[in-house]
Length: 233
Image (cartoon, rainbow, N blue to C red; front, top):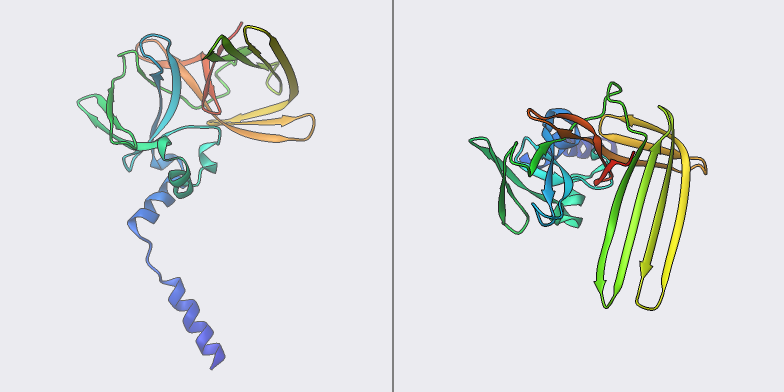
């Protein structure tokens, strides 16, 4: 009797149907066939004081603002719960992309308009620049200013160095901090893997920017961990 009961329970569990929602999320995790395309858009005061952020459009109508994690490490259900601001819906009508964020606000974008561009996977035929940098910071009021400069140098097709200069100043004082790391790297399409000399291994999302009309890959801008880095040579 015990054996029959165990067999019956196993069979019952094995035939639980997969819902449409579960199937869509499974399709997204399976990768390239579920992806409509990679893009990046202008944000933060466009057309003044422009910064850029990468996005992925999925065939099921979802879009995702790419962050630090490579796409293959993103758990869809968990991400939607913990980072709802990163998710939204998109539609393409008459050459215009309509993106609706988690609050229901819709913004339109169009290729060639200066605020919407294709992003590309890395290929070994695309030569990396020697040094890329990202500058961030701002005015926090009461005379307090912060500045952070991140740089990454691709020394050749195997070795890298990275460093950060960060500082804060007030009307009465100022302080700066520098850090530097090095190791080896590999790039597999949209994933950058950094292997540090101290034994750490870090994987980051990765994409190549675009320029020209029609647009084509441009190595003057990279997206690493969701942040835009520009050629610093």
